[in-house]
Length: 300
Image (tube, rainbow, N blue to C red; front, side, top):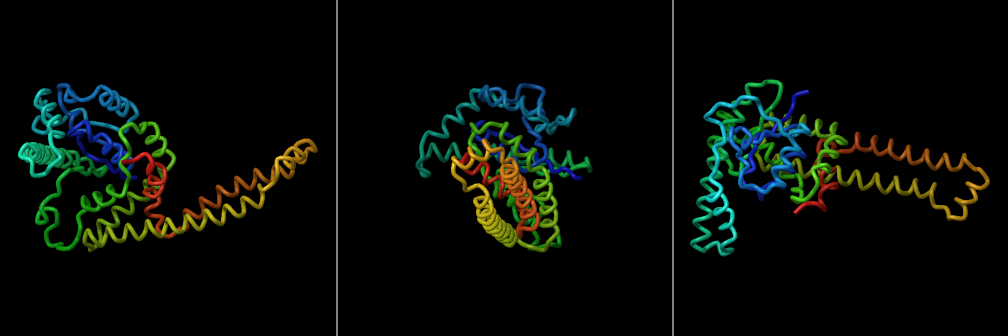
């Protein structure tokens, strides 16, 4: 199975929630900061560095043993890095001169960061056992993003960005264990979504058309799951609407057959849900739907 890997950077400690969003989609993540021989996370919060170490140990973050010198992350002086971060809150007025200066500096940094992320992804792409996608903060110009001779057709990177935007952005304090558990529980759905992404990348469609298709599939799957939930609830209640007195009576009189039928109904309900998911229209986007259900309340 061809792996789908994201090449990204932290850029700023405040963007850590975005890393959790990316972790929902990609099989593995490559952090540009970890290509440096020095402590590139110097100046970031200690809990962030601890999380990065945990993710390396869990296998979610992986980096090659060797990276070309030209692609390595150079250290940013802590005082300058911190001053930029602090000045981001200097003024909320977009016409404020101080705000304009800060935004200009951040735009330059984002552009440089995106260039290095794209360059690193291109270097990693020599590994044909996986697909490497740069996750950037700025869009490429249309004449570069669109493949030659294929006007109107979205690139695979545009498809990925459209898909990624459909996922919730968990709060920074959302435990990584919840992210990892969810990935393990729904691995087959994530794989199905990755196959769907590759299919979208081969179609002669614009970004707007692809986005419309994704939204339609999500809507169809949502309706199918709502209908199944209503049907399942009815059959479940038919078995389990009994009074506490009846339950005690069944246990006292050893009516195990009746109790067993109730437990069997629970198991049957799980099987019916799996069957409904496999047959539901829009199942290509089932993984996105489940991510929204699980992390929607834990997101900004």
